[in-house]
Image (tube, rainbow, N blue to C red; front, side, top):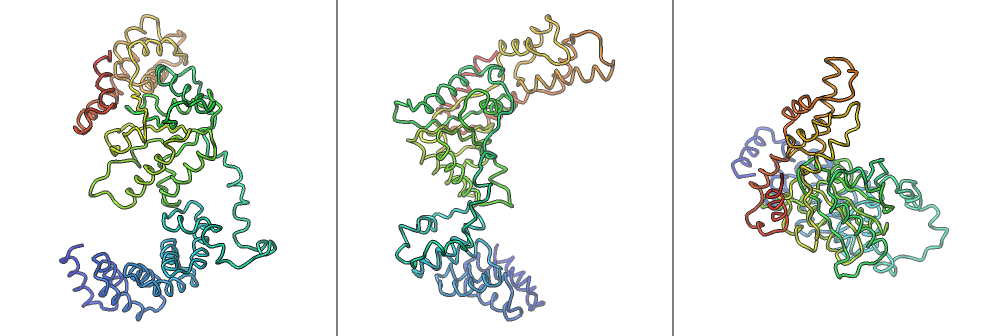
Length: 451
């Protein structure tokens, strides 16, 4: 908001001095420019026009908190609470103002109301002071008999089956067979070895935490490998996906990150799976907003907290160049693994094992394997399925049990491999400052040896 735009609002207010919506906008812009006195004056004008205007009162709560006038914050916040018009942000500022006035018992009550409405709520300041009642405020609370808690409005909150049974949070067995995954033998052996090591408490090195980062083109099997794990190991998989974090109707993303890491520790041994990790571990810039900064810093903090514990964290990304540099250190993800398109040998094995409506003629296997460089398994499956589908539409279900290679090749020409574009993006997007990193080395070596 520059001065010219502010002047435009002032001119409009001269023509419509009683326009509440316009004056609220003007007051908010003044607040963001830290012109507190003028902002307060305009909020007060709104309240003269409408003494019960909630937005004006909320604006004054933020303004007075920024000015350090905590008594005023408490008075207005109490009015909002009584009117049932206090948002979570208002309740947070209310609790913090009470803390700054040394009203710890009252702050605790407000904090508990926030937690009741949002079980995943997290604020570093309030959490550090008010989370442990016994340690911080037991002397300030009056003695209460057990009977006093029977009618407590918070008493039955965690009796909800949602909190008793958390099985819905974990990845179910999707009937994807581990032994049927094509290729990636070293990666699969690594995952099983590390899981057995942690589950059996046999870790002998200082770095007991396993931070596995699987990266590479989309469709090459990163998520598929994780989804197949329940068929191979008994360790539960706890998935954390971007839709859970960024749901606008849900809770604060940083609070959910804290919750899932806590759930991982409680479920020991338990594997935490972070899909598309670049979406909340992205490289920070000057233009990065506060929300993404909070998410990135919270994820980094939680990863640091498990550095020396026996925990297994698996993350996937198709855009490693978007990760902030701090997540590429050994303290965060200490085992990066490139998951690329199948090799010539793996493609031959794939085509030999196709058991759909029809199989490929033996003579077609070598030809298709040679012509399908850069294609992922998903793309190969799609090409084969399309070839069968369009043949059946054109000719009906044929009597012969094999399909010609040229029909599959025609579909490969239409689909085009995503991996080829990925390698070009990697070359263009990977920062020159990271050229010596293991990820760059692995991709470079893969490209040199890829057939």
